[in-house]
Image 1 (spheres, rainbow, N blue to C red):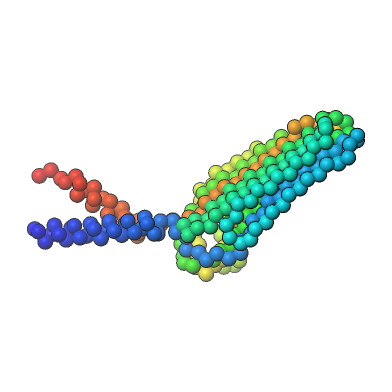
Image 2: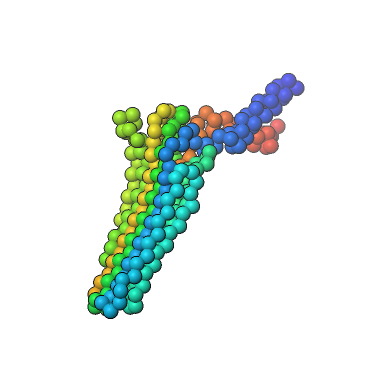
Length: 252
């Protein structure tokens, strides 16, 4: 009986350690090798009236490769017309996940005859990576776009194989003004195949000859992590079950 109890305790300890190791090291770890990366934000605004000269502003920033946190703003105003645009982005690459956010906005007003204003903004993120092992990944995020007046806005998030002949994977989500979409998808990656994750937002507004209040915006956010292997997850679950049973013994 004593030997049986010792065996059970050892088996539980082994399972519990396996589960603890799974939590500490393997949970969500991506099996990938990073390749090309580029991120950029840009914004531009211009406003004018028949009684005043044009006023322009623009801003652009790029960073490649590696981590990025970018912001760009542009604004122009000539009374009584005005235009403004802004773009921002943050992204991270870690052993456990790829993640990123981006947002753009544009506003334009031209309340008098002869006034004109235009504004535009864009944020772009692209990461190319190669799967180092067959694995399942989970893509979670959201794309949305808003707008009123004259202009347009869009947000796009895509996960695809660079070479469709090696893998036909294509997860593509795109929305326009007044649309939004919550993303939660599971996809299979194959060892040795290169994949591309692309996120893009654009917004543009314009107004002329008495138009007021044209404004548009768009944003994206995403997180890509690995889905745990069923065998590892099962071992962890068994360890927890044995722990619960040990703490709550059956009545004699």
